Length: 338
Image 1 (tube, helix red, strand yellow):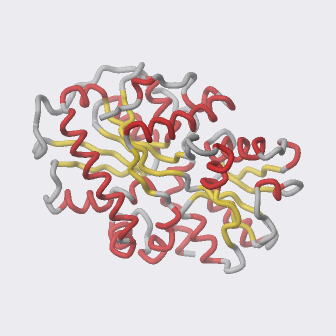
Image 2 (cartoon, one colour; image 1 turned 30 degrees about the vertical axis):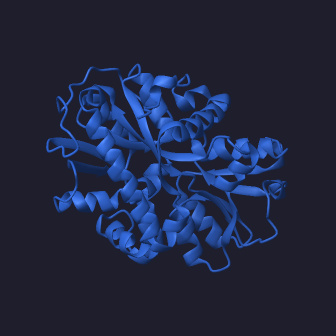
């Protein structure tokens, strides 16, 4: 149905979160030079993925198209993280919105050539089922859970949560599918199936089957085991090439101001934002986008809040599989603090 194909657009965002091949360290030239002030006119090239991370950018994209933005932005939206990585390495992009662990991989591959400037999306993973008796992670014991991507973020996240809730791998059967639409198909065919899906697939699956609902929000489950002051479940972050950052710190600060305003617009004006999301081709239908928006956890976290949320999340992934973050955890210099 149309809803599922609409949701397919963000599949790439939640899928390519294993270590991308072939990224070699390379020196790249900065685009702008000198202090451009707040009203920067030279081009700032921004790349993002079709999916929740771009949903928080749509107001800024719209402003840029109308020449109303503070900077002269050029936006590129792609379906696979690998495309963004290549463009960052070659210097064809200045800023990119990437899956959190992929940013760490890129940092390691470029020997510290990038910095993370904000978290743009917190957790977008939910467990959906028609069984309302599932009210905690512990209730998954003895059940089968359908999910995508062995060795990707959803896999690491659910394994971590199972362990923290006293369950081992043998207590829950994890059945992997190659993409979220396959998980959605299983949920449709088997009334008692339980699925782990990212937004907006969750919204699309529930729209197609009124017996389905979100039984566990993994962002909340993560925060429950982390406690006060712990890390957050992070989906997407925004990174900048350090060559660009060194030459243009005011441009980055301006971008952060505009990104924060755009993220707030997506949360505070969902009806208007969903029309822009549909126009941008992120989700085909505005009503589906509007339903999904409240569950997409669009944010713009910066500074120390960003650092504590992200560093703890990367630590959890690293503890399970060092390759998931590029072999080692980034140091303090990875985090841009204004």
